[in-house]
Length: 103
Image (cartoon, rainbow, N blue to C red; front, side, top):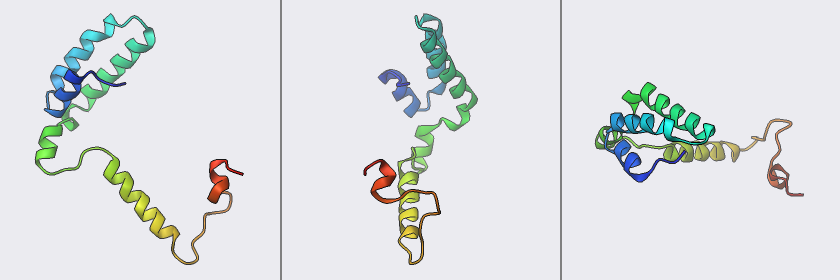
């Protein structure tokens, strides 16, 4: 679910309580049950993880936010290990062109 710009910018400035309040306000105003459920689930998630949602504080402390840096590092480590002599995929794990459905 993508938040509208005012709410997403509030997340970046540690205004999590305002975001939660806005989401709770929006829940009953959604016509589709699927949307009501999604907005309600997001409000509950943010409430449960409120203490972890301090983006401005974490950025100021120099922490990287998001999974991009971690995913890149994991990919790099896996690639380096697979390039070692004698390393091959476990039996039953496809590799090469057939791994992606190409024949």
